Length: 86
Image (cartoon, rainbow, N blue to C red; front, side):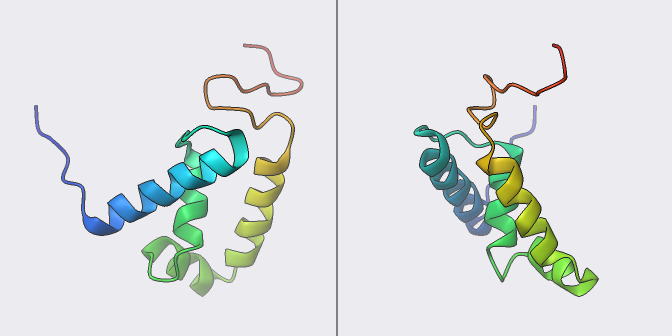
């Protein structure tokens, strides 16, 4: 089994994602929304640069704010999706 190499940039993004999770849920939950938020908030991240070039960076930020501010944003393992079973 190969181990993934964690670059300094990746470590920084994951640490920021954990901080975002802690701010929003009280735990250092690292979910996809948190990782994406950490990347789009980092002007040096390729993700934010690509989204900026496409002209959608601010819209992605707004959408993430909407997703992450809802009452269904509890934790990754305890999320409730209104209208969905499972």
